[in-house]
Length: 83
Image 1 (tube, rainbow, N blue to C red):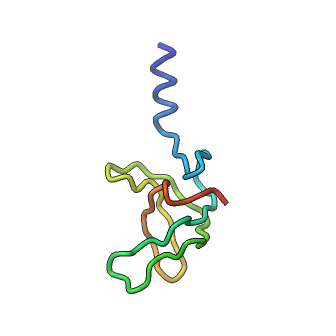
Image 2: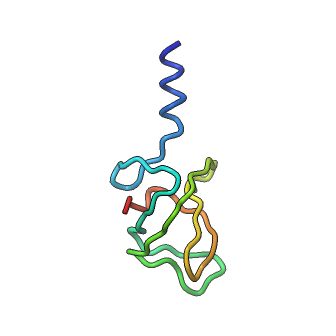
């Protein structure tokens, strides 16, 4: 029984590019220039994103956030680091 509890608790952990654990409300920094569909400009490396929310997704986008000048969007945790 203890193994299933451990498996459930580790399944919901989201890690950034440096293997730090992320949680709701954290601030992160984008580590790579990212293209945004439908926008002439993308997200530049070094952009700070405040107050993230972790979501479950099948396509790998596990961070929901709002970025100034772009709006609400989803990011992959592999392209951010904890600020």
